[in-house]
Amino acid sequence: MFQATGRCDNFFVTVGRVNIEFKKSYNTNVPTWDSCLSNFNQSVIDNDIIKHKCFGFFVSHRAHLISEVQHVLSDLQLRVAHLYMNITVHGGSFGRHQDSDNVFFWQAQGQTIWSFDDNTEYLLEPGDLIIVPKHTYHNVTPLGPRVGISMSL
Image 1: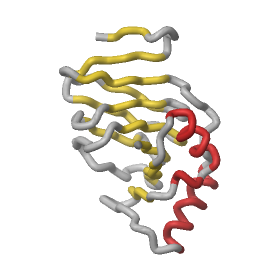
Image 2 (image 1 turned 30 degrees about the horizontal axis):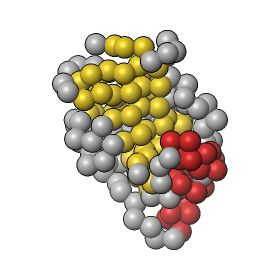
Image 3 (image 1 turned 90 degrees about the horizontal axis):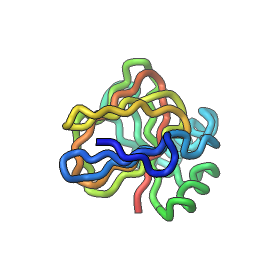
């Protein structure tokens, strides 16, 4: 069930009893590949914790230092930002899972498909934002190399 929220490219969708919000072209001033790779490399240099589930898929925890991300964090009144990056065509992701916090995911580079248990799917492109309530099962499929910023309180 779709309900427009004022603009034809913003939607609230009910999956079960939760609302997923999708904002097409929320903010197209996205971080470049260079700034994301530089941010990731600094995490490596500083021996930060980097999650690595499968070949070519990485998650680092200092995306809040990227200038474009700082503006979005301020706009959404959030504090935490993690960089999700696939550098290969078949990089994978975490598979079907749920998060313990509400997730605000901003697609920076490349494309991903977000799938939910009711068979609803969203194609995220650079600048798109999806807001997924905590404990909502979802799966993210990268369509090639990509970078996204996952944010929370």
